[in-house]
Length: 195
Image (cartoon, rainbow, N blue to C red; front, side, top):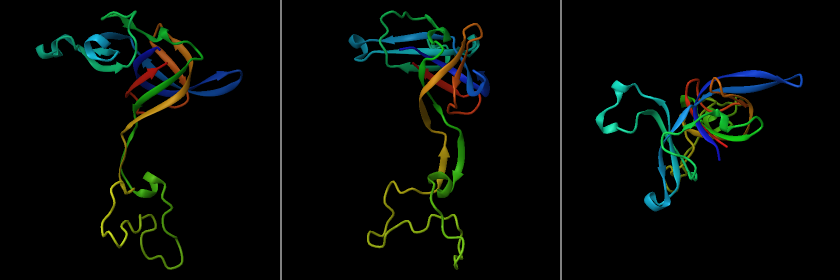
């Protein structure tokens, strides 16, 4: 199962058979194997990979061996990998289906109509109050609001995964990968790509 870390660049479009296809460009890798976890030692199998090396003067003594800005762990068998080995976009091929995970754009404090898709109140017939409010939130008998009630609050800035995205182009020379469709996050945000 191939995997890599990258940074979202932007959305653009390419042409396939005379049709416009929306794609997202990702500057993926090169990543390096930072640690290999095994069943015998760690009780599970995983590969920890690092992306973007820190400057030498930025590494503290306590961070020795963690000279990467971003470290992520992928649950995978690492029989044929060694610590320090490079992983680049060449592990993916055009047409591969991938899963992309990242942190979605933060949208700040939003009302229930935008955040949860609530209907809102009637706009006519004597409604004197705000039309986009939640309305009654607690029933009369327990005299409290139940946990988990959908209310206004902060929206976005959470981990989102998108499955079954198709790899449109791979440019191993410039460490670029083009994925059909949109992926979570703002420009420059970290994304994980799994095969």
